[in-house]
Length: 68
Figure 1 (cartoon, rainbow, N blue to C red):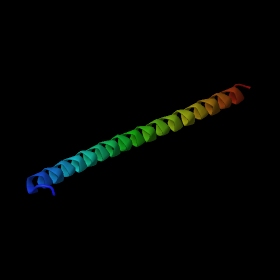
Figure 2 (tube, rainbow, N blue to C red):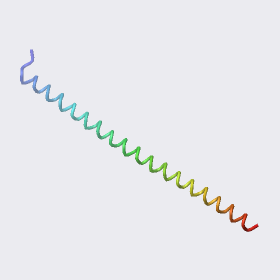
Figure 3 (cartoon, rainbow, N blue to C red):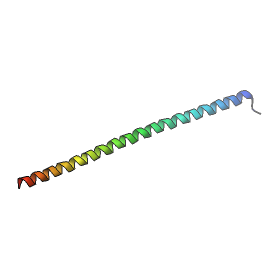
Figure 4 (tube, rainbow, N blue to C red):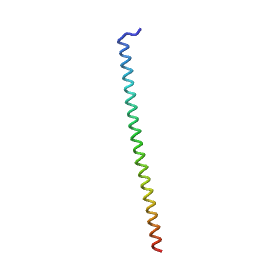
């Protein structure tokens, strides 16, 4: 049979490991959130650049039509 002191040590060790696991989960969640935010910013920037290119193309078309 285990001694009370050994049981307490096992319980504390288990609690510490659980705490470490929760910390890792929170850190991973924060990393995922940051990565998602960066992807959104990148996607918005790409959409903006595409719209800007389309606008430039349309402007050039109008200039060519006006010049004819």
